[in-house]
Image (cartoon, rainbow, N blue to C red; front, side, top):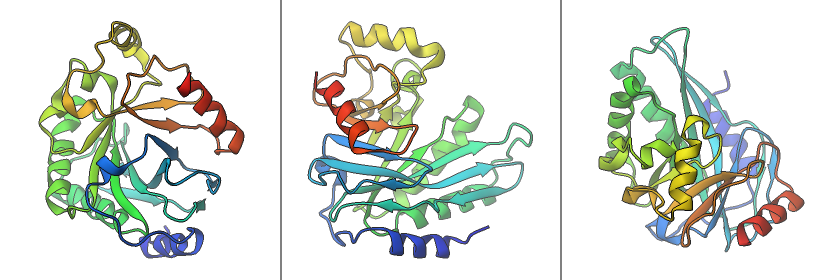
Length: 251
């Protein structure tokens, strides 16, 4: 296992120099377009950092019966100077060894996420966890603790299943700066989500009304005005793929 210390060292080597200080309140200052940079090498030096931010996968955490397994990002991520960054932690659970959701697991998970918030250039963190109903108490407590322990200069956001923003609104009471409803890989929620958007209603809770998440390989529903758009690419980003999705969004 590669240590987090080595992970930070790799970021120091591979990141284009970042602004070391930014005003507080990242969410209000984010541009309208945020690219997700997932688990692959990415060269995003072609973006305009005044118009595009980057949410990069920093950690992948798997919770097993009594353990926390972390896999830090090792792939390079090249960016233009001044890019606003959000460090994403992907959390998953083992189907073969159901987690105990112990204090030990909560503390370890919290520590890894807090470490990612200290990486160069990071001004926000985002948690990506499709928590089942039985996993929500753990997740609820983790997010509350993150809110208490993160400095005011670091924003706290999550990705959200579309159902969490429509009718299963358990996240409404959480201390979040933003929840990003995922408008791709919708599964059984697809018809209901499309119906909501086609009717012009959108999502029902306030924390879900700032942003949406789409993927370049799926046709997204019409996005309401004044929404920040996070864009996922199942492959490495290129100038062509970036320009193509911008044309689709701007139609």
